[in-house]
Length: 245
Ligand code: FPP
View 1 (tube, rainbow, N blue to C red):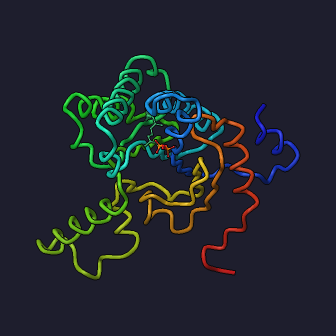
View 2 (view 1 turned 135 degrees about the vertical axis):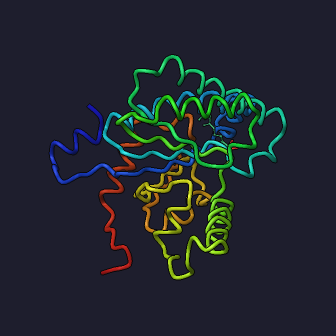
């Protein structure tokens, strides 16, 4: 039994956040500390991504959004980008073969047209295979940046205003949400950032207006299911007022 479940036996009011976001940070530093290439950190980070994803699904998280590759990550050395693409490919191939019994619905957020055609096909196949599953929605943010997501929404809304499908007065907070990659999903309640960095890094800017942040000084490859439980307990200790009193 995990830490959260143990505490819940004592305090039945504890809740699981509906939507959790995770910035999977610290792979490079984890590798450096061990004298390994950065790519070794990503390999262990990718393994941990599988463990944490399954755990979140098991404990009843309904939406999990993980930051796997940002619009800025292309600036990394070619060797590192190539290694990351290989890890994405491996994961997607597994998702299409070994994980067919899973009930997790996999969705990609970000501009996936920038990836090579093989990866794009795997992305489409994975979404298709999992689209009717009843379980947790796993949003994998790949070539994702929140600013470009907002710009894309503005362009799409503007186009509809120009061609008369929408009126200026139709534009409100809900409508803007509906033009983001996360359309139709609840906003994140809890955003976890391992590795001790106090930054948002262009992640879910619009959606996280009232999210609770938990920053942990643990590098992503070492981030355990107990750490997830601790973050959820920390979330439960917060007094969410959404601007009220
Ligand atoms: C940030 O750590 C991490 C990334 C840019 C990549 C995240 C990718 C994975 C966890 C593996 C693959 C994921 C899937 C979906 C299979 P960093 O490299 O910036 O670490 P640093 O800040 O210590 O340098």
